[in-house]
Every structure is written in structure tokens, then in C-alpha cells.
Image (cartoon, rainbow, N blue to C red; front, side, top):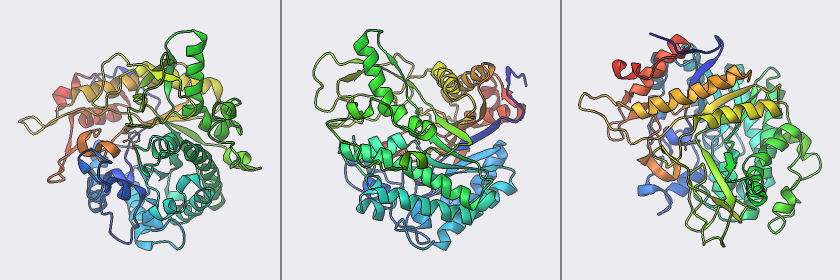
Length: 479
Ligand code: IFM
């Protein structure tokens, strides 16, 4: 098979999923309820009223799914742990059956030659902790570190890479500002408190993991927003700065530089006084990282708002999450998001691979010694099986191909990118969009729960075999 671009021999090829999106079995083996159980069961919160009750039934099909990963040649698998399986109420003793599930998963991955990459938190907070204030409460950060310690003790050095948080921007701003994600709160001050407690939780959890496992590799995954200003007019440049601050800098700077952005307090002055930041917190947050995980899907464009914001600014933003009434862009009310030229995915997100190159190069320029990994990248399309039973998802193949090219250009520029994880291994519960949006390289038939590798999975297997890009046209032949 022709190889159009070679990647470094030690480049890690993987796929990613998250607990609530695939596991199902929400009432089994002592698992406690999470905020996503509550949220998805609340009428009107998810498309079609979908819940993660069954999802892809991975909890019962884990061994077969690992066999599938092996068949696809994955070198690493990024999964998340459901906190409420480990501690049903988010604190207190370990639920042995819950821990045993992840222990088996890790063992089976290793036996299959696949490196386990474990994320501690991918949005499914135990409901009992939300009842006590959730991420708006400092106590949640402290409990998160206790949970991290339990996992480090329970899974130990079998985990190849630990990730504290997945996309804390979504947890804070979609969960507590726009409220389109669980717990569905619309309170800007709570969202900013959540930002800080997520940052603090990250730092405390990283320290707890390293106390148990001094050799552990620790990371965090951020969905950094690649946004551009509509013009170089000062007010548009200022609009971009405001978005960058609450989208990216509010996580990057505390985690990597031990400070909050200089103008953050002024930007958010009418909302909070940041008195929840205590002495010593920033030192606790700025733990050394072994790798920074980057999730990337699309880009955005902003300008200074010309007219007063309508109720619910409806900004699509690169995350495409609209709220009827509330914006996730706290402290940036006079910023307007502009539609991006296509093509778009089924999420309505524009396809802009160069944004990924720019992001990786920009991070290297700022943090030259920090290794990076693309921990999520992929696309939802309305793919349907053909009469031959296969799923010819050529648009997903092209999307992944072009974004791997973009990673390649970053590597050419000398950026230290260690790996790539396609989102997602399986079709799954896409949060507020329920099962309506399919991101998998493997199709899941939600009636039978049967798995069918799409052409993208077969093509990706060839990429992994070759250790580099193979032409998109090969996908049709393979399928
Ligand atoms: O499905 C999500 C995932 O849980 C987090 N990152 C973005 C994906 C696509 O929306």
C-alpha cells in the first residue's frame, strides 16, 4: 500500500471513548447515579429524550470491544472512568465491583498489546456531589483528588498515561453557564467558580497520582478553541482576546504558568470577585505535565457585536452547543460569532484542518518543552449502512486523513506531537444530541448493538499498519 506521509516510528495511534457515552449498565454493580443520568432523564434536555442507560452496552461487551480494538491494530485506547462506579456517592469507600471492571479492562488491553490511557473525569460527576454544589464547590476538587488516589492505587502502573480532566471548558461553561450539559445550571458566577475548582481538582489529582505512582505519566486534555478575529479592527481583536481568555487561557495559564490571565478579573468583574481562589491554589494547579492532550474539531470566527445581543446569543461557537437562553461565553457578552464557511459536519462544525496545525505550532511556540498529543479528533456524519452491509463513510475518512496531514505539518515544523486518538472508536451517546450524531469509526446498531467497522476503521487500520498516511481512495477498496 502506498504511504503518502510517514510518521515517527514511536508515534502512538489510538482511539478514544468516554464512560457515560458507551458503557450503559447504569444501575449495575453498585454504580451510583451521575449528573448525566439525572440530566438525560429530565424531559427536554436531550434530543429525543435519549439517555446513556444502554448506550453502546460496552460494560457488557468490553472483552469483545477490546478484541475489536486489537483487530484494528490500535496501539492505545483512551477511555474514561465513571467516578460513580468507583465511589457511588463521590466519596467514601471503594465500590470493589466498579473498580474491578476497569481493572479487567486495563488487563485485557495490555494482553492485547494496547496501552491504556485513562481519563479520570469525562463529565459524569456523581450526583451526590452535585447535590452539594458540584464543581462550583471547592470540596469537589478535594474529593476528586481522593478518587484519583483510589484509582492510582487500584490500577497502578498498568495505566500507561493518566489524564485528570477531559475538556474542563465544557464541564464549566456548558454545565454551569449555558446549561446545555449536565448539571444544566445557568449561573455565570457558578461557571467561573467551576473553572477554578476544575483547575484545582486537576492539580490535586495529579499530585495524588504521583504520590502513589512516582513514575506515572500525567496529562490533562483541553478543547482549545481556535478562533480568529473577523478583522484587525481593535474592537474585533479585543473580541477575540475576550474569547481566548475564557475559552483557553483560563485553563492554560493556571495549569502551565501558575497564574490567571491578567485581564480576567476585569472581564468578569460584574460576575465574580474570584475570592474562591485561595493562597497556594495556583501552585497546586501548576503541576508539571508529561503531555498536554489537545482535542480539536473545528474553528470559530468572532467580531465585536454590532447590535445588542438577542436573548440567548445563539452563538454556535466551535462547539456548536446552543442554548435557547444562556450563552457559555461568560464575560464576553459583546462578542458575536460569525458563521464559518463549509464544508460542515453533521454537528454543523466547519472543517478546517489547518486550524489543528496552527494550534499545535502555537502551543509549541509558547511551551517549547511540553509534549503534545491529539487526544480527540473526528467527525459526525449521517452515515448509513449500504446494501452490502458496509458503511462507506468517505467523508469521515477524508476528515481524519486531512487532520492527520495537519498533524504531519506540525511534526514537520518540529512540534513534539506524540500521538493521535480518533474520536471515536464507537458510535455513542453524543450528550445533548443523544444518539442522533454518529462519531464512531465503528458503527453501533442501537437495536441489536452489533458493531460494524466503517470504511474509516478499515482505512485507519491500514494507516496504523503502515505507520503513516495511505491514500483516501484505499478506503473504498478496503470496504
Ligand atoms: O463526544 C464528545 C466528547 O465527549 C468530548 N469531545 C467532543 C466530542 C464530540 O462532541
